[in-house]
Image 1 (spheres, rainbow, N blue to C red):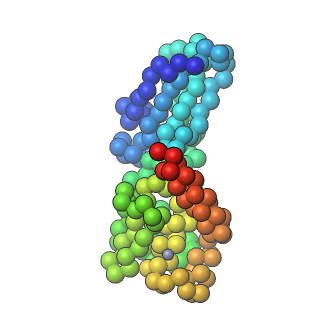
Image 2 (cartoon, rainbow, N blue to C red):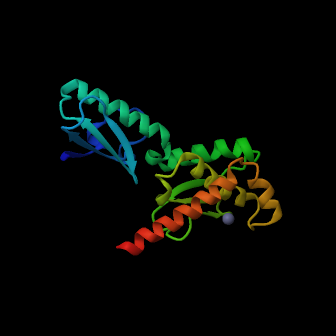
Amino acid sequence: MKIVSKSNSSQRFKHLKTGSKEHYPEVEVRYSSRRRKTASASWEGERIVLTVPATLHGNDRAAVVDALVQKLLSTRPYVRASDDDLILRAKELADQYLGGVYPTAVQWSKGQLKRWGSCTAATGTIRISERLKAAPSWVIDGVLLHELAHLIEPNHSERFKVLTAKYPRMAEVQAFLEGFSLATEQLRNKV
Ligand SMILES: [Zn+2]
């Protein structure tokens, strides 16, 4: 298999409708001479990697690539979410589970290497680690909800647990994050 082109999706997929340009994931297109009919696409971390039959050209190729990118993006909407998108989502979750306790700001954070999220209750600011961007949306929803609950209850008290337990997949979120921590630590040790 030969890698013919590497491109940043912000240039190649300008016409995708939602999200701001700088938050598009990188898309790599590989052309395979062994593949005759079907194209495939998958996430590799925060990148989308597509394998397309080398025989597919022009508009056909563009249409296949575009459809697969759209499909994958819909499975991980947070990959291209901006801070504005984050606060909108946080408010939706607050309405749904916590009776509408709103943060003043929600931001992606580059600096958070040991925590997945944090909440400064005094200012109402929530930060979510950028390392979570490629995680499934229900995981990031869970982390957002955890931090939102800190706006009501600062400690991991019984009251806090009652609040966060309203999110049905909270136990799965914990399990995912434990596995994710372990995996990323192992990756770091490899370097
Ligand atoms: Zn906490």
